[in-house]
Length: 319
Image (cartoon, rainbow, N blue to C red):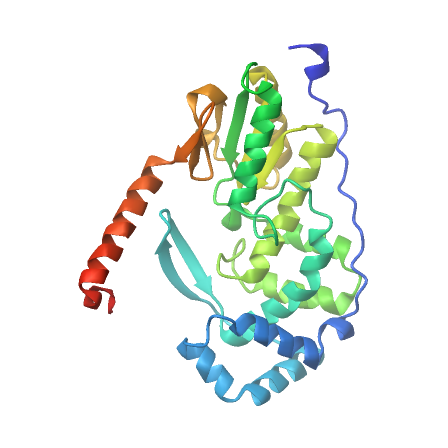
């Protein structure tokens, strides 16, 4: 490995904490609560629990507002169910009133934090997503390989049970380092503490909190390790470099950094040559082209077959 390729890991640089200065009173208003309801209800008006809340909407929102401003709000329990997409995931769904509170917090906090996340964090952010992450990976691969004329390797790993592994005390400490208002911090902690361990997959706030938490990793990778070609989508991380030795060093340092916060899926860690094909968020990238992952292709074929059968006999889609 050439001298210029050596890993920079001399001293950890703490990510800057630009304070969120809005007051509790400016966040928890009747207008913001009504806006949160309108944002929340979009696409959910056919659901029974949503309709039940909407039946007495003014009273329900006013009661919720009074509980919030009087510091008497208590978060309810969660309903648990399982989805397969294709991996098995256990979703925990809060009540409608709690999800309106989640949306209220999200609407206020997201713009502040989103401006501070690194460019190459692609999950649960406006204007980002899997397609943008794949495009960025292709651009990085082109740059490192000099249009496929040089060696190019890719480090891939994900974080073991990411939402379950989030340390609530560390998360609350991070949020307090950003947020100045004590009452607002208490409300955020009510939401965090509403779940026994980690964060529930079903909460809108969980998506933001995970990005705040993993921003520490992103900042460490970019500012301390000085990794130029780094991408994160949720709990999946990709690093592109011409040297596999460099990538092994990168993983060692990241593993050490995260050891007190999260566990890595070490058995899923891969350092691969770009030219052997690299799976990037459901698409396999080769030197000159890409294709869907075979399991994704099979799911798509099954979906198309179901659509075809439904066109012939619509009753098969009726529960």
